Each structure stands twice: as structure tokens, then as C-alpha cells.
Image (cartoon, rainbow, N blue to C red; front, side, top):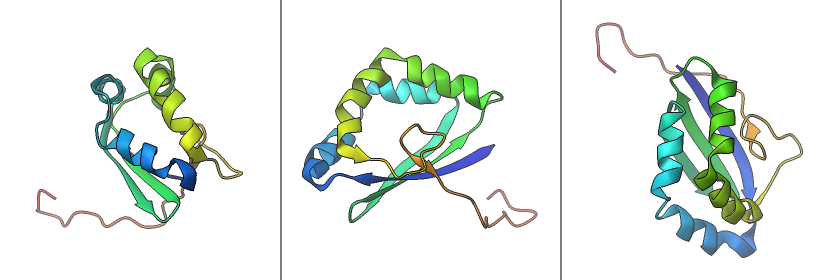
Length: 114
């Protein structure tokens, strides 16, 4: 399993639209993410900064990301959400989203299911 954390800025003038869109993410977009082995995906907001986290459970990350990018529902979704965002200078795995480097992770205790 691969953990991915990313960040991007939210354009203040598009904040309400972005939040409204994410209050009811399209089923086709969610299906494309699941089909590409994405699990436990969350987006958080602090002021005008978005933070995204997901877990990748597949074997070919680049191919699965390309599959998401080719999905018609996802492409239509991005036409609505991309104008709401402002990329940092260093975009990464998520296109306009910048990757964050994991510096620490709490491992499950031995003998537990967590």
C-alpha cells in the first residue's frame, strides 16, 4: 500500500463552489477512483489550503493514474474543480496538486488489527 499526501491552494473566489461540489461528489468520479485502486481518500481544508490524502492499493500506480485521467466523468469533474484551485510551483503526482513527503508514520502495534 502506498500513502499519498498532496496540497494545493483554493482560490477564495471559488471556495463556495468547490465546497458545494465536494458535498456531493459524482458517483462516476468515485467509481473511477475505486477502480484505480484508490482507497481512504480525504480532502481537508485550512483557510485557503487544501490537503488531500489517499491510499493506493494497486500494482501499477502510473497506469492507474492515467486511467483516472482518461475517465470522461473525471475529466468533466476537473473542468469544474480545476478553476477553483491554484497550483503551487511544484506540482506532482496529482497533476496540479503538489506531493508532500512523508516524514513519519505511526505503525500499528504488533498483535493488533490496527
